[in-house]
Length: 241
Image (cartoon, rainbow, N blue to C red; front, side):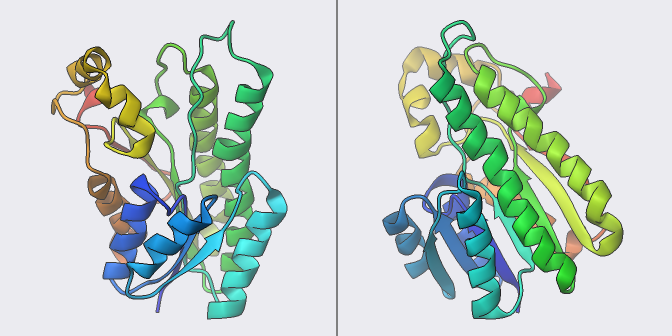
């Protein structure tokens, strides 16, 4: 049995990923800052448990992994999908927005990856997918904190892939484009903003969260046994144009 941890599992890409991994037979630990949302996701799965976790707190990330090992004896998969977005031009971006974005999107990914990596290295290895963004490779206006955090996630994954690949732990990044999730709801509800975003996307539509989850499913499966340190854009062609 595969034991998977998904952060940000209360909504969006995290929830869709938890569902996809459970559908293939994984035991899924659904972690989210919103404990009720995590519980709702877990209750919808054939084998899911909920954990309320603030990934910006190192000790909570460590506890998430240790409680998973206590309950299931192992960790095979980590999907780090928890994330936030704070938008402002660089000259208007305040310290709190910068620090909070980096704390969740980059520090939190590292805390979870380090804790899960230690468990995987002590066991039979494993696979990680860290959720980046098209903004891991290109910038948009008003997104200094978000772009910095997602660029950091990409290089973090590559560094961990080099550190751990020879020891049986593969680490990859999925880079979503515009996805129809609660995080994107405000932008997609604004006709002008939606038109601008879709104008940059060759498929001319946002992704469904399940379309991102399908790629994560592959990358965390034996079918991706030789994929390590990769950045996989799932962006409707945004970065191709």
